[in-house]
Image (cartoon, rainbow, N blue to C red; front, side, top):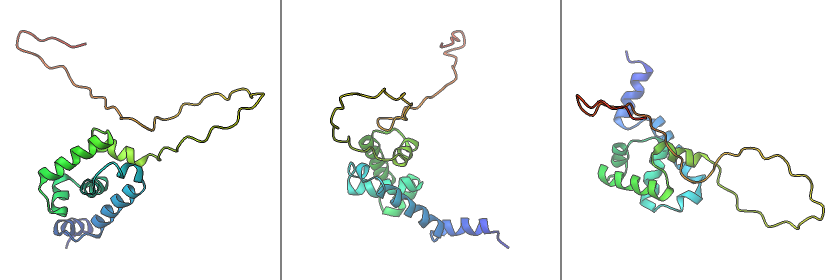
Length: 149
């Protein structure tokens, strides 16, 4: 007797899992929500991007679209470059943000300006998201174990 999890895994391996298509559709929905970003990539890259947003790996995407892994990898690199991100986490975060609104038309200047309201910290909504990577110092050689500050 197979468990529901085993059945789901078997169905996924057979390629007929409704959950997989639901995730693929979610990638299309996420991408459709940001036409400002989608306009920066080609049609072939947009197709790959939808699968990336759905969480598929490059080999899975290659199988779905009938291209080689290398072609999908090249599309992925071009997408990252076009959208100014470095990895999938940044890509998903970029698509999860609300599109920036165009600046409102300049309002007429009032004669008596009210006291300015205190500024609240706003999250950064544009530009690259920087990664912080911590690595452990490695010895250079048997007699030259130097620590990096």
